[in-house]
Length: 206
Length: 122
Image (tube, rainbow over the protein chains, first blue to last red):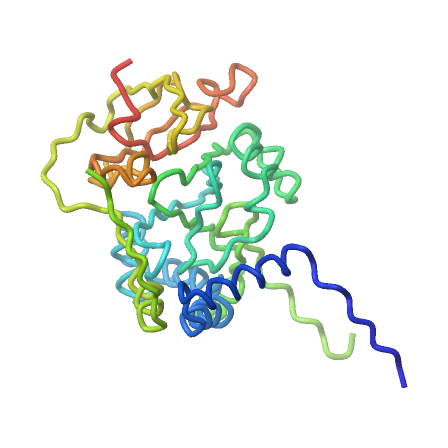
């Protein structure tokens, strides 16, 4: 028989539990509403939603035009709008322009399109440094941009939310929309990465 | 004028509807904009002790209006539950050098969404 060690819960987890049970006890929060919200962000929304939008823009030039002209309207066509993505702006990365999204005041993020933000997006370091030294921040993410590329930082300080439309990688001509979506990462849609081409298939008898 | 906040407990159905439909901050209004696309604008030098969406790093800096996003409620007053104070929101482009000095790359820029009340003619 192995001994099973229970690690004590972290202080923040205990605090959240205490607040939650108080709110439920006082009838301020309905546990069923909480479960609905948690289920939504654990299983329904996430970067796969944004990846679907990006892949469609890559294969459908008319959709891409509408997406860049009116992000909110084009995303609504696909039925993918939702809380904290009500007013969407989509910015396109090209060979000469690279876009990066940040929220310096808090951690505004298109929840319905990308899910909940990663921890680093909420960190003070990212929020302060992305505006003043975006190129150094990108380099730390492994993305070194030449001087010929203009870096545009979008600080989501009001009620508009931003999505980066990354460049379609080379070598993806024959891929289906679904296969293209599988290549698109969360970081590429925030602007801290590029979408990588699919890796060459490994020969069976390597 | 104050904004009342409901103390009603949110139901699971209401939570689902909110997640799916969202909560629009836009206002249907024919309120005229204070600025036009292409205008040079200056972020006001103010230091409110209360809630604001005007980041400190942009105060006093001059940028260009790139787009008029339409009319939205004003978070600076909504945040205090004072008034919705609807007004135009603009995408304003500031060059990296205007914000951070000559050492910043000349090509780079920062875009902020600013409200009429955050801006003035330089």
